[in-house]
Structure formats: structure tokens, C-alpha cells
Image: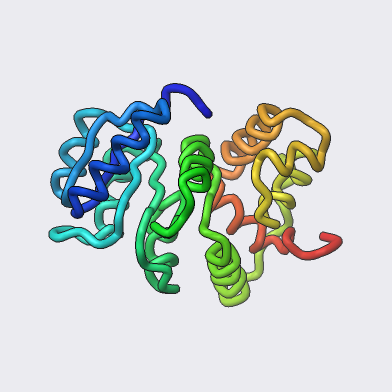
Length: 220
């Protein structure tokens, strides 16, 4: 487990919220705050500056998409992991487009949730199985509808382009590291360098860029 991950839990059901916070604390995470509505979440986030916000989409005041936009508007470095009972197509896409790093269903097992939390903390897009394909499919649709993309930025090195291609295929940092026979940290460095060169903010945007370039296609 990555040490020192500061987590805020936002959910309007007290038993679920408190139980999740307790479980995270017992697992060694630093739960810096809990909130029962969007307004409270925004106020607390500004005060405690969490690394990851675990957020339910269904809140009594602001909806989850508004909360995501406001959180990132105030602090772009925050990572947001949606933990929702809804797996509806539009809910997932709206959350990701607003800036959520990951989307997990509340039916997820405890170890799956902890893995998603840790990956979210380092900026990896994480989705409940089945939802990743939905998001990538939407990005492909948008890429087809949009203007013809230019060729891959020539500033990228061959290895950065190779990592970018694997990002587009949906592989995790660990899987990319195994595929290229390099360390997890090396993959992170390549991804961060590529984000900086392309003026992108996270792996979700990077995956969309790669798909627009056709790098997710076999033999690209």
C-alpha cells in the first residue's frame, strides 16, 4: 500500500460513510475528513487538502459532477474516485468528463477498492470492469467526430510514444512496466514527462489523446 495517502470520504449515507472511513483508517490510510453533502465537501477539502476524494454521485445538494468541477477548480492536483451504486452510461461519462480519475461501483470488493484508491492517488484511471470499455468507446467516438488529429508530437521519445500506446490500450502502470521490462517508477516518469510535453493533466486526458492519434489500434 502507498503510505501517506490522505483521503476524504463524501457520501450522504452516514452508516456507509462512517463505515468506509473506519475501514480505510484501519487499513492504514489517513482519513482527513468525511462529508455528507457537496457544500460541506468543498469547504472541508479547502481546509484539509486531501490527495484523493472518494465521492458518491448522489448528494442532497450539489450533484457529484458539480462537486468534481468545483474541487478541481479549487485544487487541480486532487484525484477523485467515484464510488457509486450507479453504473449508468451517462453517469460514468459525465463524471469522467468533469475530471474524475476513476469510477468504481459500491459492489466492488474491499481489495478491489483499496487497489483502485492507490492507483487513483498516482493518477491512473481506474474503472469497475466493463466501464473502462465504455469510456474508451466514447473517446473513440469523439475522436472520429472531431477534426483529424495531427501526427504524434515529435517531441516525444520513442519510449514515451511506446508507453503512450500502452496507456491507450488501458494497461495499468504495473502492466506497462512488466510489458517493457522496466520499473514502475520509470513508467510513471515517462507518463509524467509525456503529460508535461503535451500540456495534459492526467492519464484520462492522455488516453483520449492517444486514441485520437490512433495509437490504440493494433500495429499503430
